[in-house]
Amino acid sequence: MISLAGRDILHSWGKFVFTGIGLGLLIGVTLTMAGVYRGMVDDAQAMLDNSGADLWVVQKDTLGPYAEPSSINDDVDRSIRAMPGVARAANVTYLTMQIDHAGRDVRVMMVGTEAASPGEPGQPPHLIAGRQIVRAHYEAVADEATGFGLGDVVQVRRNRYVIVGLTSRMVSSGGDPMLFIPLQDAQQAQFLKDSDAIVRQRARTARNPALNPPGNPGMIDAVTASQTSNPYVNAVLVQVREGFSPDQVAEPIRRWQRLTVYTRAEMEEILVKKLIATSARQIGMFLVILSIVSAAIVAFIIYTLTMGKIREIAVLKLIGTRNRTISLMILQQALGLGLIGFVVGKIAATFWAPIFPKYVLLLSSDSMRGFVAVMVICAIASLLAIRAALRIDPAEAIGG
Image: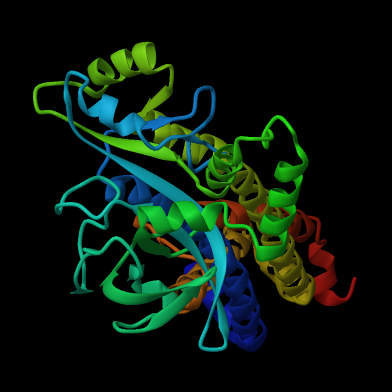
């Protein structure tokens, strides 16, 4: 039975191999799509791990700094540090933006952190080159995926920053590499207005008698200064003391600071089930479509091969070959086609995954599930050819 299927495959090896390669490319795309989703989840988990935080304190009734805007006063961290169970607390800002560097656009997530001792939440936990930020202005640490090098100067809004350190795997949930700059500079960059907007704002303020009362020229200066400064951050990252659980520390902060506090598990749920959920559904739809296309290809080629050897199948029936043997022969051909396609697809996905703009994580468990799915699809796709073969009349072997 196996030799029958093997001889038939060798007889049509060209068509069989080329179909397997085409099917393999489809399977490679399918494995890559699954890897893109796994990469997005891994990026989100890496972002949370590398933040060094146990708790995220954000604006009340918001989903936090990664999923939606959050704005809290930059002096809240002082009172949080005094809360029971808090080991460290640090302000942080996040802003995704496009940077023009060396004639190319680089999309980054700009992170504003406080220059403090190593291990503070929000700072890159490890460097592959250079040093951490130690000055209050105009220094930056970049993820290596940005393509920046030590000593490079990058323009962010009106300011220029020298890259003093490089890190790795510091990316947003969307895969954008991070660029760390001093907190005060990041606060200014988030709400920086152009010169014309500042002039118009000052003119409107000056025309308002409540803000510019006669005989009190100092008031307009104070109002203007408050309008051009930014005393807000997106979140406070908190590290919990040993012996305390995150939930124990989070509850008093929620009660007394009137802010929303998320634990590591809650923040991961927000990122994976809310922020990445839409992308996951889209990828799932692509996987379904690709599975249907793959099944159609296998069904078509096996049916074509079967219909091309009607006389041979009729001869087999004439000499007494059972229908079960013929069915298993066609099934083996379909499974062989699936095996060739999976091997080609796995090799293709492994080779082209590193050149994707987003991180592609190919897991062995996904490959095993993919292999089982391919075999099942090929088995189901062979049913059409099996049905056609079983309806062949043995008389056709003698031209009847």
